[in-house]
Image 1 (cartoon, rainbow, N blue to C red):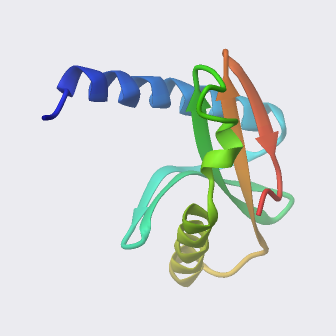
Image 2 (cartoon, one colour):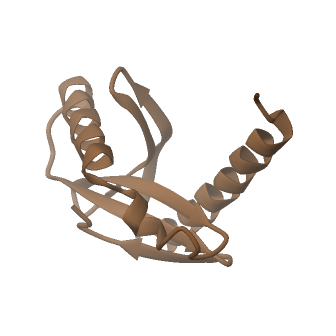
Length: 117
């Protein structure tokens, strides 16, 4: 059975985390390129650029550590998905140096893990 109210809460909670992550990366000198970029391989939360490098950022928002640290949810399957998204993006917009980051959001704080994988 589906719980629409719970799903809406999760969606809004995740959106709030993404908004905090965007503010944080801008403060760190990144230029926001795209949000929620959809490809045949899945969706990238944030695509940003800094120093001529395209950075694909997965945002993980948690209310606590009972299920582990947010970064631990970015497993090998998620990493492979992001690599395919990056390849697709490069085919459409041109190749540039690329890296992958994870933005952990907990208690209103953002921890950006650059070159996470």
